[in-house]
Amino acid sequence: MENKVLRSKGYCSTCDRDVEFSSRHNWLRDHFICSNCGSIPRERALMQVIEIYFPNWRKAVIHESSPGPRGASMRLAKECPHYIPSQYFHDRSPGSLVGNMRCENLETLTFADESVDLHVTQDVIEHVFQPDKVFKEISRTLKPGGMHIFTVPLVNKSTPSRIRAKKHKGQIIHLAPESYHGNPVGDGRSLVTIDWGFDIVNYIFYSCGLFTHLIYIDDLDRGIRAEFIEVLVTIKPAKGRANVMNMLDQHWSWSDKLALLRNFIVRPQR
Image 1: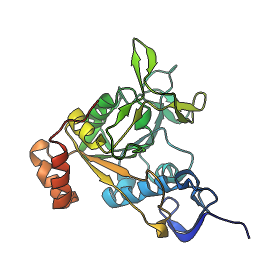
Image 2: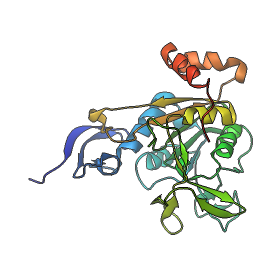
Image 3: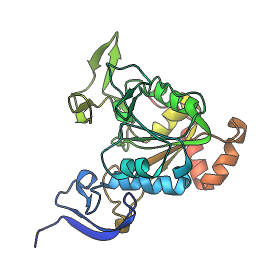
């Protein structure tokens, strides 16, 4: 019998069926695979959170930046008629189509104000150079009551977020040794520009004024067990800032609200 580091049977939220999850590698985040759809833990965690926080997603206008070829991306594309996938192509006009993919730069989206119900990004926000502009653009384009549900590796658990690279006059300046993740376009590499920490919720708030819920799931029966497994949900209030506390009442416990508001006393380091 083939040796496995971890093997478990359960329900996969990305292919919506009972499956087996298994890994032959200690790094579960990229190797704890669904036997049916090939999804990995963070994709299943993201889909689980979408089902809980945005159960009517099939009827929504969903924009996903840099979708993957499996998992949550595939399910959203298959079951949501108004799903809009995008990539950033440097040589194409923003808003144009490249095959079935829309060209979009998260820092300068071409979507109209309040036109998107749900923005989805999976391990994208650690690759942008101006995250404050990204969060402002997401806030601008979200409909009232809309959400940004996303994953990003929160590698700085007990220290502030750290900028690894920045742009100055079009040139990339490296502030830390270069680090790359996979990229479905271009040369297959995407530069990591920020090592994010838990202070990302502060950063989002000070960038666009929206509150963000940070969710951690460890559920072996759903194949959700790995490193850096957090899912974040940024919510645009249904009736503007005056109803922020009403929005919090709908989604968060009092302990969550008090803990989050305490975090906003000190601005995050940039």
